[in-house]
Length: 278
Image 1: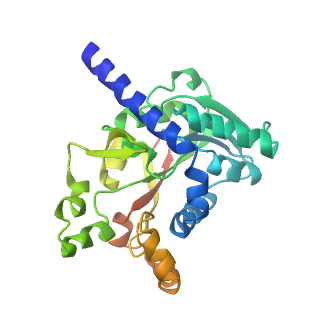
Image 2: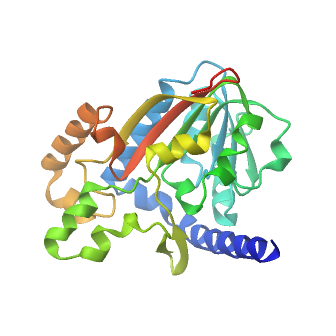
C-alpha cells in the first residue's frame, strides 16, 4: 500500500512538472492551431446543449482556464481545478484579467484527491482534452462523482479512445509503433516539455463502466475522425480548404455509429440519477 501511494505521488509529480512547463506556451500554441481551436468549439457546443441557466460546473484538469472563462462568460459558475502549479497560475491570471472572480473559483487538486470539496454539489462535471487519460484507472476519479453531483446532474468527459484513424493510417508509412500505440494496455510513455509520464486510452464502454450503473449515456460523439490530429500543423497550413471540408464531415458524422466510438477524442455525456440502474 505504501509502495502504491509513493508511485502515485511520483506519477502526479511528473504530470505537474510537465504541464507546468506547458502552461507557459499552451495558449499561444492553440491560437495558431486551427484544428485544436475547432475541436474546442465542438466540445463547447456539445456541453452547452446540456447546460441550463445558472448551472454550477466542477471542472477537472482545467488547464490554463480557457474553458472555465468561456463558461463563466456564458453565465455559469465554475470551480476550476487542476494539479499543475503553472496551470493554476494561468487560471488565476485570467480570472483577474477578465474580472471573473465572482464566477470562477480556483482550487489546486488532483482529480483523484478531491476530498476537500466533497460537501459541495454541482450540476455539471466537465473534463476536456484527455486530462483523464493521465490516470491508469478511471475509477480513481469517477468514484467521487456521486458525491459531487446533484441528482440528475451531468458529466461531460472528453477522453482519448484506443482507435484514432489518423494514427492508424500511419501503418501505410511503416510507422507501426506510432500507429498502434494506443492499444498498449499498460499505458504509453508520453513526453511533454522534456518530462515523461504515462498515458492510457479508454473506450466509451470502459468510461461508462467506470461511471457505474447510476449514469445513463445521453450523448456519445467523436472528435476528430476525419480531421487530422492537432499535431499535424503542416496539414492545416498546406490544405486549409481540405481541412474545412474534413471538419464539416466530422460535424455531420460525429454522433453516428461507428464514428462516435473512435477519433482523436470522444465526448461522453451522461446523466447521474440515484434511481438509474442500467
